[in-house]
Image (cartoon, rainbow, N blue to C red):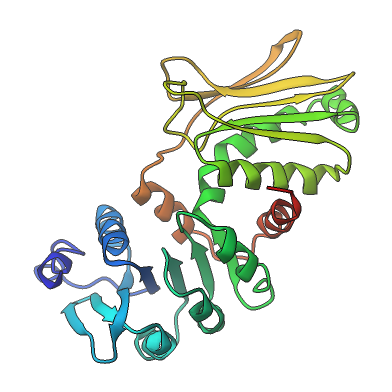
Length: 290
């Protein structure tokens, strides 16, 4: 593991160090840490100190150090907060990228992070825990980042007056998704923003071979007596189409963003502030029956 982390920031030993702007602490299992290492490496010199910590049982884990990066392998969760407190740059923002680990350790981590980015494979338990952190750190989830273009495309349709007027009468929301947790978060966002109380929500797995199968969602539809609109990935393209049934002139076509892990974390590292829309979406998603 140590040799792999030597290449986290290519060229760091050969070029003058750029002024550091913050610390990124990645926590997770060894395999998920490796993926994060590669993603951060794709960003080049972004002016951050990277601390990569894989959880284990060791009280004195092995470490690997480069000029602007450190890897800690197999650290016991009960020492995680001490490691972060000691290694973060105290005068600069600290971002914790949580890719898995002891959920109990999240409590202390939240108090040390200026921004906490969740990124776990099955987020139910973590989401329930993290929903109490809103006043302690700027919380988000990479699933939310994956939904940015979907949310923006739908929001643009609401620039139209008849869409805004018909939204109150929506009776059914249907989402086809390759990631059911992302679908729940998207549905939670709509329920929270539109103050829905009696809208039927149907979440279904994306069919095999569906267009946009690599995207978190593949198709979304909202249906009511005065409004029917849809979002879906355009066939054989990397574009998203948002359209109102019976109104061809209203269609919006936007390119889907870079869905790579490096692209997603790059977007999040540019954000500093608390995201109230995400917080409301998360609470609403947790209220939905599974």
